[in-house]
Image 1 (tube, rainbow, N blue to C red):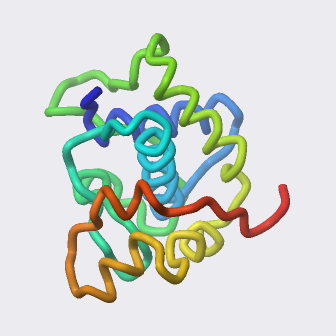
Image 2: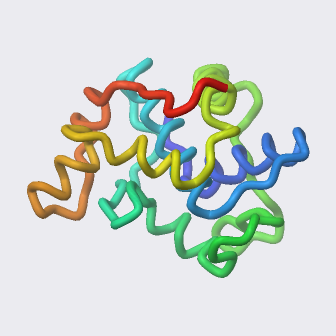
Length: 155
């Protein structure tokens, strides 16, 4: 099940739009990470071949960063065009495993602020922390798979 990280981002943005919720680029990055992690833990499969990089504010997929960086800390009000196409791609609604992961992440994390989401990715011994401690840029999928789940605020 290899998707593009931009299709994953668009699927999250579509969900947010359906609920009238706006999210920032930083929130989007963390939600992409959580969906990736949830699917990896549930199925053992990676969602896309791009890797997460251990940046200061947590895991980042460079393609998603490059696409949405213009928003800075403002709410995103658009979608990614994939491979220069004139249309926006989201993941097929028939992909039940993906939408199970997306729905679970959305239900548990949609109301968290960007700083709360960042703190959840910075947990001691977690995948991001391990990469930073080891001084590597790429966050290892096995570390993501082993990482637990935290909820910073009861929602």
